[in-house]
Length: 100
Image (cartoon, rainbow, N blue to C red; front, side):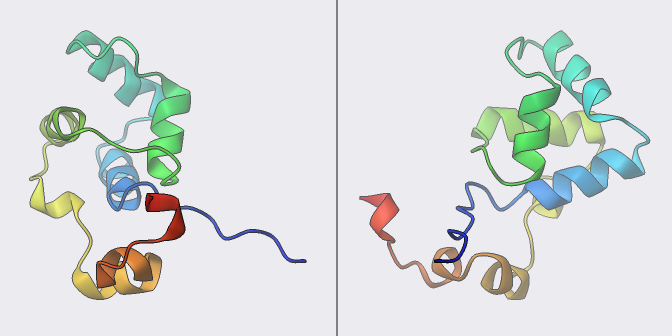
């Protein structure tokens, strides 16, 4: 049997990574800024998991990230065509067995 399919837990991770890199921040730097803003539980490992779509992102976390990265919330969401490619079940609105 092949490797199980990767479960995508957020759609914003790749855009967060790109915005962080454009800002010249390391994952450790972004985590530190989020901690100083009150999200003390966010560390470099959690940033890595968010960027690789292996962790969900809460709405207030996303808002703080957008502020720190100096980007709009809209810019952190992929275009619809990219959603279809990256996460076909999310784009279709279909529930997967994992959702239940």
